[in-house]
Length: 155
Image 1: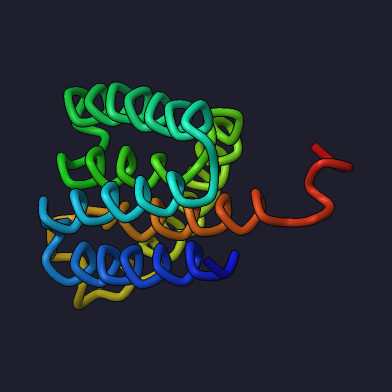
Image 2 (image 1 turned 180 degrees about the vertical axis):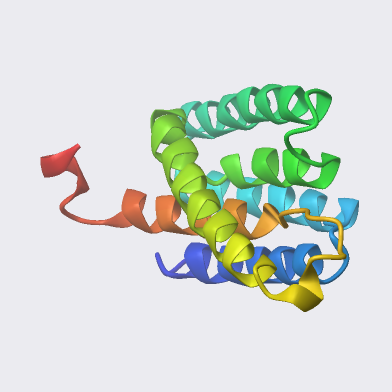
């Protein structure tokens, strides 16, 4: 399988999740499940069993963190599940890279939302951030970063 199949497949899934979250503030369960299952297939195809287990461990840790974020009302349930599904695509050693890039993308997203909110016509709406966009962008950037040939020299 070409090394670009994984990021292309993930980009399609993340793009749909971002679109859905921006449009209706909901990431469907079937999309989270499809994202996780596709990630497992790609990882299993491109690595050995130990690496696949490493990616599953990353997803389980992400599910706990996302569940805590949902419990504290920081994220929605779909965001928590999509974060865990996205983590399947990355090794556990990419944990902090994924979290950092999601946080950076989220910061940019929140600033953009505040800038849009300054428009008087938007002030009556309840303010919510479609964080699925940040999760998708951060995870895609993490996936691309993990593929970079120079990554080992820098990280």
